[in-house]
Image 1 (cartoon, protein in one colour):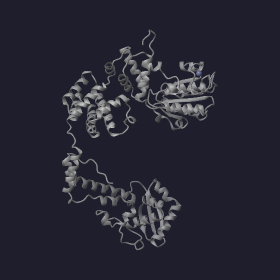
Image 2 (spheres, helix red, strand yellow; image 1 turned 30 degrees about the vertical axis):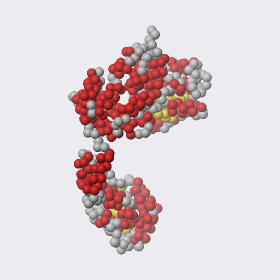
Image 3 (cartoon, helix red, strand yellow; image 1 turned 60 degrees about the vertical axis):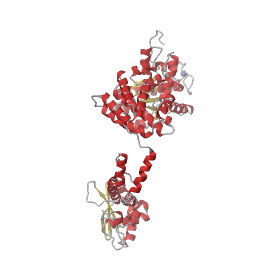
Image 4 (spheres, protein in one colour; image 1 turned 180 degrees about the vertical axis):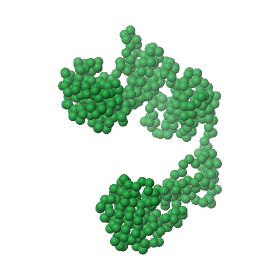
Length: 565
Ligand SMILES: [Zn+2]
């Protein structure tokens, strides 16, 4: 590959020069090309995404497309003086600015002065600002003035890895394009292409290791490839790549994982020794182990793992083979152990020991009881506990049911512990003022006439309920307070209050300042606190139920979560 001339890094040498060469960002290319076709090219673009995914390359391709002497078409010609100047970075009409080093207001002012003039020999003056989020606030303000009223002959292209740091005023004036991480398969494809042009002999799995090192960044992958080529020359072996990049050989990972599932402790420890011998970082090894087991888990859990995993078809095939004799649960139980070990490795003085322990534990995990055996045991349990008290599902349902149903129950039936429940025996007209129960029935009454008003009242606290007067409090600043202060709302509720009490009743709405604790709970708050209390009671009851205790004993497990349905 070397030919005596000065070596140019691959990322520069193979920088995409047209939309068709842009790998992994087809969605961006397509939209930009459509905009060009339809003559609707925005005056400011924002390219966002991780480093090395093609933002600046796309900006240059776009600049060439807009200024190409042949005409504004799908692709730049790459041959006219304008295209060549932009490629070399010598065009007087295309300004490429690094936001990190030219971030002051003066820089932007210079820019503004500069773009006043018409382009010297192109269609547009194009300003590309890389890492635009690094601009100072004053610089942004200066920029904004130009963005608000851009001259016809000016186009802006901003690129950033951190769009959330941009002021909304800037964001709202740009057409935004989110660049994706490039998939492993696409990076490998591009590397294979380049290897061909560079006449380098290298296997797909070695290219896979290099691509993986890039972690979705084409530039980082190419930099890793540079490093490999500098070390290995024209013939690259898998081992060299693994050693050089400090990535673990997939085969070793597969061997260790097979040993774990076979319960082969000898194999497991030999594997770790091998990892240590080649000088891998134990934490990194553990992370790759987690990644490997995650892949297995996904393969065992979904029908189309290829849509979720970023791996090559060959790797998927290999992983499929490895996952044939294990269940998702088998994988999951071991994955949990590795994740725990990985977090311990951050502070460990003996990293190898932590990894060995986790792997030994994983290979010694007791096999799960076969499903048929489980069913038999459950059947036995069911017959044995037929006479034990039933779980309180009934009560659970009643408590979370809508207000209407709840009021239909007697207080004792729903909540043995709550004296303040609605008392169904008292008729509304007989007692217009007083307890929370009347309030509950009044809200129910409003609800049955006007659902929206009822929904607002559920969030109100009954401050006063006297003959001829109902005073309702809502949290200060809340949506409900605003809704309830509406004259029409008060008028409607007042009319309903009159027919509910059978006498003239005034309704007043008050604001409750936060921290004022003596206001009675609103129905919504009460329901929430009741639900929480009930859930807690339910949880205790389930945890202490004989069936649960017996299940814990038989399966050697414990309750981690209780849910009500
Ligand atoms: Zn051209």
